[in-house]
Image 1 (cartoon, rainbow, N blue to C red):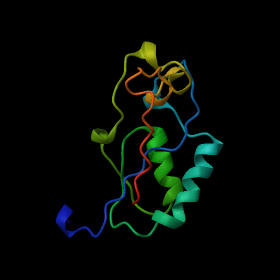
Image 2 (image 1 turned 45 degrees about the horizontal axis):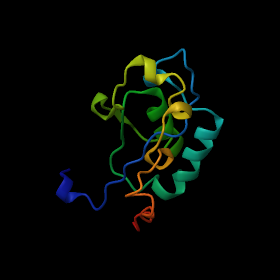
Image 3 (image 1 turned 90 degrees about the horizontal axis):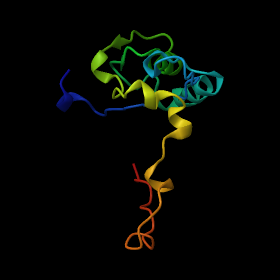
Length: 119
């Protein structure tokens, strides 16, 4: 099937993993909250896809298995997350600053954030 033949393409980022600073992020597994969040997506996604592809990372594969537990899943390393130096992985979510949490310059301080996209 080509992209042009697809009625829709659904991309899902992995659900919340258990963050272990001693383990590389690409080896993290889902925690109970992540599994529950993935299962909550199942009614919206499962059964609507002709083909399921996941990265080889456990958290991504586990997310898709929670969404569509009885379908074949192809893995592709090309879907893996961007690799970061090990030093920045420890507590990555807790210590990583988002653009919203960074100090604003006077020129951008008055700008309001854009609303979320309407899909």
